[in-house]
Length: 90
Image 1: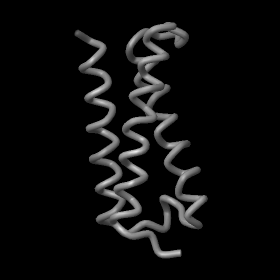
Image 2: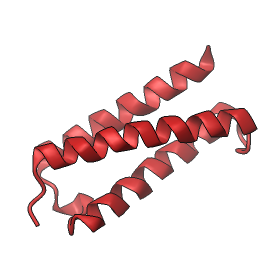
Image 3: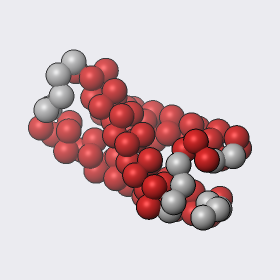
């Protein structure tokens, strides 16, 4: 299946909400060692795992995405992680 920009946007929107919820739970429970850097690393890994799982469902993979789509994923991942990080640094 060819993944469209709209499909990718839906996946990234879902990941945004999913990671925000995960971050809320993680910061409430402080389950991750290493403080904020440990939590940020955990969230980065979760983003990658969840993205790949969602792409597999669409019969795709991060390796199959066009360069522009990969760049969009990288930029969106950074925006999501920056937002979560800023939210909890305050």
